[in-house]
Image (cartoon, rainbow, N blue to C red; front, top):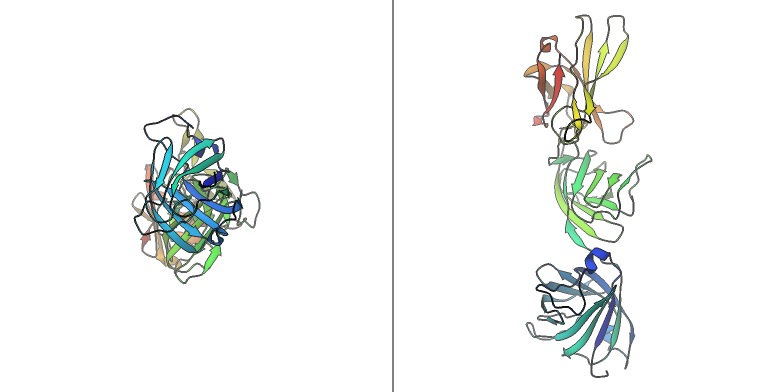
Length: 383
């Protein structure tokens, strides 16, 4: 086979990306998509010096590909056509970075897939008639991630806030952080936030899964457009841009959906100075789907003072306390505290006095504004 170039690529990637039937014609044949980092490990004759390098060949949606050398030198990009037996690269680059005039067909290869091994054997190649073996490292998939407040599920977000990023292949497993300080790597996933000033910081992680990552926007992140980069344990990388604002108030809901009954407790202070915490929600497993529902809160005798302790995020960098306003069922309620919740990373707390005029109102909305920015609406039930 001295007149043929045989490219042997060993794919070390997940099974889901290898569902191609070898030797059977299909209506829409496909090759596994992703970025393959290739290093020539063996060749006859020997290989041309230009091929003694690391190549990154990316197959992407729409039968597109691009090629780089040693991670920095752009070799070319274009499209490829595929049948059940052959693949033809129709623009600059090719499977080994072979350059010709733009638009020139630079090679047709027979392809077979056997387990985790993809073999490309030259039918026609314009560059070098030698045999090469390429070893391919794990796929690095590239995607996008959208970052929002973990409380309100809105953007923008604030520095030090708890946020959620949504995407695909963000992590190789589902893992929850079990220690504090929070780790900056969890199940191999890491998140970096590059702020508008160009400073990049590692983000503390609460939770990672293939479709969602919860993290804290790193302290010190400046306001403006920030780039969030999530790298998973298999080197897949997802990026997105989110705006960082001074405040972005979000209230936590009991059902973790940004609405409905609040994730809150009531604090009753009696005339003798004693105090008691009371729930405002309970979990109802009989519903379809099961979820938290409100528990009517009795404000009790006139001598009792009842506070609603709300939890949220994106609030702590507020201006003065007077810039934090709350209304419950349309009635103004005094906010005695708005700031970090003790002993919790990124979590904020608000202590709101419940007016006695709310007695008998039932389920009503809680509206919060911080420095002129309105939070998501949650609810409380007043007996």
